[in-house]
Every structure is written in C-alpha cells, then in structure tokens.
Length: 367
Image 1 (tube, one colour):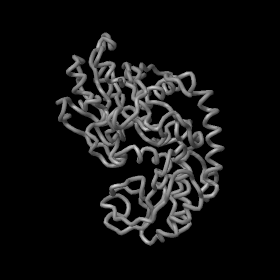
Image 2: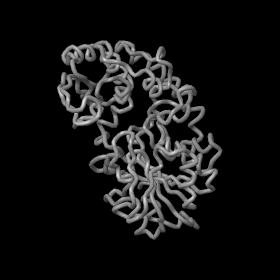
Image 3: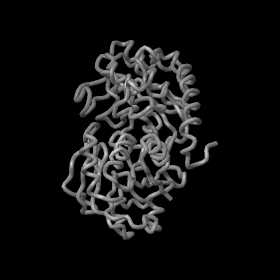
C-alpha cells in the first residue's frame, strides 16, 4: 500500500490532528482511482482545505503554471496554490491548518519541483507551527543515482539544495533528509515499494508532460533540452521523447547520436509540429528517442542531445543549463562521445554523497 492507503486503513495514525490540510495533485489517489482528498474524507479524516504544487491541485497548469481554484471539484474543499509563492506567503497559507498531509507523486529528479515545494513547506512549518506528515509513494525510477551534486551558487527552485541530480529517494525519504538540514520536523507514513503499470500501482501523470513511464525514465536526461532553443516535445504526443527545431537535419542528427553508443537507446529521424510551447505551430525536424532495453542512465542521453543540437546551430540557454545540471557551463560535457564517461564519474560522486548524507534517512532497503 502507499502511505495514503495505510492512513485510510488506519486514520488513528494521525491522533489529534486538529485542522487538516492536504498538499496533493491528480496523481495523489488510491489504486482504485479515488482522489486522496475524497478517500480521506470517506475514512473520516476532517480535511478543511487543499494545497497544490506546480500545475495545481487539478493538474491543469502547463509548465511553470499553477492555477488557483475557488474549490476542488471532487471534494468540494477550498484550494490554494503554493507554487510561485514567497516563503512568508506560504507560511500564512499554512497557518490555516494544524496538520498538513502531503501526497505527491515525485519522479526522483532534483529539478522536478515537487521536492522543492516540500522543502519550502518544511521551512514554513517552523514559523507556522504546524505538523507535516508525508504520505509516501514509490520512486518510479528507483534508487539509482546520477549526475553531479549541485553547487551552492546554482541554487534555484529547480535546484533547491546541494544533492545529486537523480537523487534515488522516495519523497518521504527526501522529507526526512530535508527536515534534518532545515532543523524542521516531519513524519512519514511509509509505502510498499510496488511497481507501476499493469498489476501494480496505476500510473497517473503527475504533471502534464509525463504521461507514461517511458517519459519518466528519459526525463532526467531529456529535460536538459529545455536549456536550448530546441523543442523538448512539449505540445506534442511525445514530450521528452522528441527533440528538434526548425531547420535541423534530422538524419544527420540521428546518425551523430547513434554513433555515440549511449546504451539501450536508438535515435530515429522525426518531424513534428508542437501545438504550444517552443516553436508552436511551426514544423520541426529532429529525433525521437526509442528505448531498446533497460536504461540505467538517462543523463548521458540528454547531454548528448543538447550537444548534437548545438553542433547544428541550436542556441544554448547557458544560465538554465547551469541551473538544471548544477555546475558551471565549462564543466558540463556536451560532446556526445564524452557523455557516458563523465556521467560515470558523476555517479561515483553521487554514490559517495548518498552513502554519507542520505543513508541515515533511507526508509527502504537498497540492494
């Protein structure tokens, strides 16, 4: 069971919770597709209001958006967005409750902003004097680690603290670690480490551009295309699996990337026209990334794509690239041939960091 389902089974775990709020989104639901707020209400938990991260409580916002709702349709509860709020604003919103439950599906990557919202909630909870309880969920990409530890000068909402790019934690484990760093308090109701898909937990997109597990597996790497003027596939049927721009030689791009031997991926020449986001309503040429087997590392794929697109004249957004990777641009390898080697070195650093800093907060056994 997920942390949500454990709480529904035994609501007495909350004890005297006072006024209860819930930070959630559409992926916060039971295995039989009941939204978290409704399931908790049915279990007798007296929820008073909902809060949403990026994309909002109802998940209707595009990247960088979080619509405020008057109320949540399913539960009838008032709803507020915590995204794009200052810490004092978040603190005031959280003063409306005594206990905040958090049921968010994370995807295990530093620049995926739900852990940044959790970090801010823990900061605000000290001032607001509220109790924070994370209803844990499995990390869909597992316990593997990738990428460098973020340098402090590149802190931002897509890099909230210094830890590896792919952190290998559940959101509950991250909350445990963050609470220690912030001198805050958190409780975690643990999850069973179930898989997603047929026979396991249902996969509900936690954000609009991660519709299935193949997107999620590639996301730690292909999200880096955001740091170029190329389209990362937003506004198409295959976000984070298509990459391209007007004027690209698709066949040359695919051949360049396939020569780099980046593991169980194949790059196919592809042509598409986004309906929104970058290059909306403009024909683009590029590649579709196909998985041909297990993908232990996605980051080399993303770095190689950024480098190969840049070789064809696509402009880099250097500031954003630095924020996503967490290093100065001069230390980020963009030649497709070097991506695997450098990422293997980063992985060694990430493993060392995790065993020193994260290990005391692991709630589940690692192989």
